[in-house]
Amino acid sequence: MGRIAFQLNLEVHELINVPMFDGTQCYMISTISNDKIKNHCKKIHISSNTTQPVSIKGHRVKFGKAGLQSSEFRLQTQSLTKSDVLSDKWLCISFMLKHESHQELLGTLAVNLTDYVNEKGKKELKFLLENSKTNTIVKLNLQIIHLNHDDNVIYQTSKDTKSSTPT
Image (cartoon, rainbow, N blue to C red):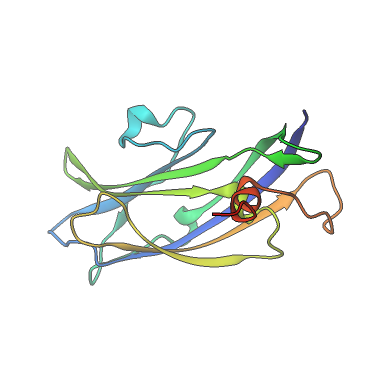
């Protein structure tokens, strides 16, 4: 079993349908983990990246430069049959509202990065946040770059093996 190095380039553009209160700001806490983080809040995100708070305008949060992140991560290969399959790796983001000294969870996002290792170029995505009382939508771009290999390599993921299993 080997470990393959990748780089994640993440660009969180905006949140849509964010509740507005005077002086309330929004920030995000992100981490890459082997497991999908089911709980939220900062103490769960070990070795996380926290952005600066951004103002809410017109029920939207536009992150701009605060939404740009770049992280390296490694994927483990698992031998399931004759070929190696990449293990799952999760990008977990908690979006937080901040008003003076009070902080509250707006919603969470968990994306399996392994599902995107074979994509060429940036992938534009929209997600409805989990645990959101206001049905907040996040718009983002992500790109995963293999650091040590040819771009023409196609990796087998657990999603590929699940979809090929007869039901």
